Length: 250
Image 1 (spheres, helix red, strand yellow):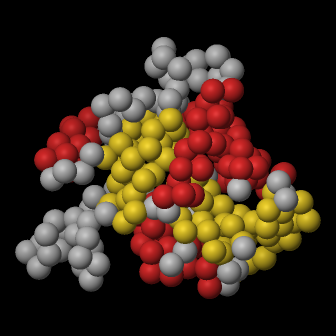
Image 2 (cartoon, helix red, strand yellow):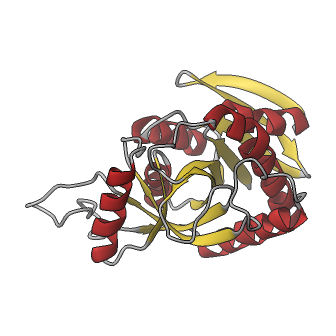
């Protein structure tokens, strides 16, 4: 049963490619795919691309071309939940598209043709990924997140993530998004640009899906500050560490 690991950023994928046994690379749909074994599991690695359309194309290729039966996403996100801090890890229990609005034909945020706003991730796979994230964070050195995270030790969270084709990088936009979604009963923990599209593709194909995001910022006016340094120092080793533990648990 082939497992696909989607990475949002090349820096995250690099450590996984380096660890791949019997690697072989192929090109399809303008994208590079790496096949091989990690921790004894058959995997295929790919970059999602930025935005929902690029991510959906990549997910479809993984399923149609490479026979992926399970897809796991790693990446970074902006924190929206009140208790979600820089350096934390959020594992998705489900996804919604915060820029989906087909009103008045459908209620705001509802996916036309699906009669729902949220798409759930695979519960068992997500629980395993959450356990792996917790194990990684518990073992991370005290100084690992020192330059980025709050003074408390980074935590793992399991909950709803929102995606949209808009980078949320202003405090006012972040507050508005959190307020509007919260008022509708959607307690969103983080915001990013790809996961909901992958969740929809996996739903359509009946493929199990789970996702984790390292929180790089609070989706506010400082969202762009030290982003590259965060990816290298925090997000990349976190993705490799969590995925490694996750594969060992499968």
